[in-house]
Length: 335
Image (cartoon, rainbow, N blue to C red; front, side):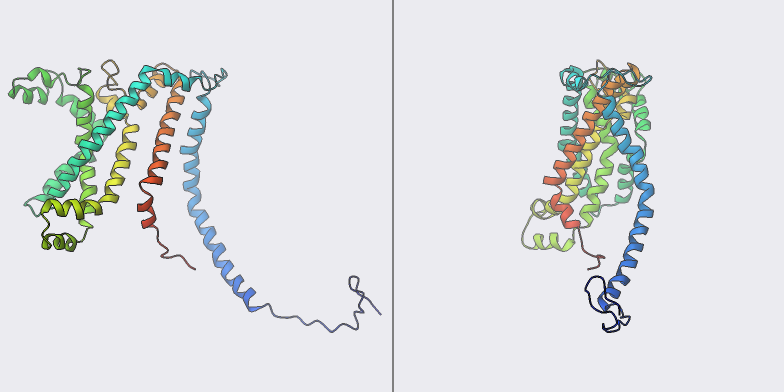
């Protein structure tokens, strides 16, 4: 006669236990879990290469720059002279760095109030049924295809003193000397630089606005016109609000692009004359690769990163939130 250890019941008196089939709910959960695990595995396999590259090319350089920004380091051997946040306080007190911020704000303001409105006006014009508009679109978009270095070299030739095209054009108005000196005059170099930047990028924003405009149903503007709205009123109260998401994205791209501006400035002016066209990225390059003050250059790069990050987060939170929420969809999600 046997007794069970836990309950003290006689096992020969207990009813015989028969193997029971798993509940239906358990079987159903098992069938669902296997495809879910397979799907997660597939996602992990496809994401892994991108995540590895992102870690190696984005996260690791940021961490290395943040680490070296705490040292007075010339880039050779390992950093040993720890200075804490001295490089950051030096940047705040540096008139060159503060001048870079001021020039960056000027370029951002010019981009927002001149470049983008002109691009929007051209997009609205080329949305009209005018003859040859496909050619105009191609011509206006073509500068965007060129690299920034190619664009810079091209305008170096255009504004070359004595033999540049600008000298000839300004000569027609009796100001030939002005054509070759715009990049040599501290008072005009920043605006000449903005002109070159606009020449390259206004076609991109024009195409962006044109795509947004063609996504607006014609019935809306036709209904406004039928109700007596003028062309300006239809644009102001129908087209412009519906172009809001496209305009907000273009503003974001313009500001971030201005913060990162480097190669075109470097080839065109090198930051001169007298640092009057220098940007944050050019200053960082000058200190890092010309003066071998890598610690200070790393601090400038971290400040640039924080400026971009804070702006992106705030813009995402307060400006793009409605657009991104509107883009979210539950389509394809299994409930």
